[in-house]
Image (cartoon, rainbow, N blue to C red; front, side, top):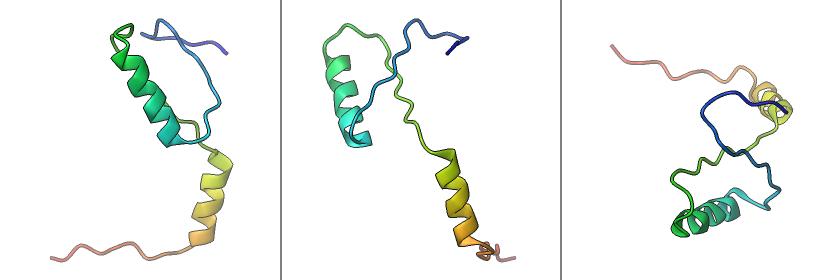
Length: 65
């Protein structure tokens, strides 16, 4: 993996849920050792595409005049 940008440290971790991840992030921030900590949850693009296909031609809401 190669990253470009403003990040000084990048880590990937396996955590059981987004809620646990948010708790870990909060504890790390409370330690005072981090100025900023960005959490970027991973998601399965294939599953998202499949969900879109499952929904099919769901009508979009129409704005009223």
